[in-house]
Figure (cartoon, helix red, strand yellow):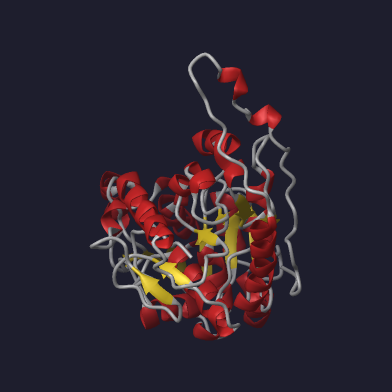
Length: 379
């Protein structure tokens, strides 16, 4: 199991991918699998932990130098027999593009969970290189967005350990927005919704490098400590309490979010989600049952007035079984068997003057979004 090199497993605060990796490793080990986790320094797991790099890099998320260093060092360790005397059956990658780019030269069959959108440059990359791995989408929306030539082998939603999230049916009056301070995530739109609805708003999440100016110009001027509060990056009991006591979680995103861990975390505490119908939101939010799907800020503000119609217990029940780690690992066990049994083909060789030999997107197998390899719990 290869986690990203930026944040330890489990994450001390922000880190949805790292939370998923933690749950998968724990469940796989509990089932008797021999699992080695390659992750950032400071990681802990029931799996055997290897930390190829000298330090974590939370301030450099997305830096491909560290990603390439991490992935290459992990593969070197596998080649050298670091995981143990038995051969490695499959590598399950959660990083980014580097592992897939080198997928044909991986030391074992490669499975990658797609935590990135399959649009624009990323879509073109996977059309060119995606055949080098068994690809797993985390939502049907993400799978449908795969361009021609990208084969999605399964859809497996990210899991959550619901028992870690305290339930509360007693709610305060504040609205909650949580995530990284990024224009596409929409904290400025959440501020507008709270203003229209006449409700206090709590914003929580990190300001990552490159987004300082956006935060300073579009978010910080509205923070007054009373109607609009900024809690910073939150973790542990404080994060759980913010979720559990919120009247609603706002998800005013304007991009095709592949999944959205914050939505299932909020629902696990009994807090409904009001979301724009973008990306995977419509797969998580059942309009009128555990939240509302809306088109814009005006509709989102009006939906705040209907929160008393949503039952916190229904919100929690909507994720309790559907996103359990046991169901995700049921599916991944089948995916690992699929990957391990596939004939591995060498990477296509591109030489000068022979560009027509490279299998472009039109020559690859057409994508076919599947519900899942195994769906024992309505995944």
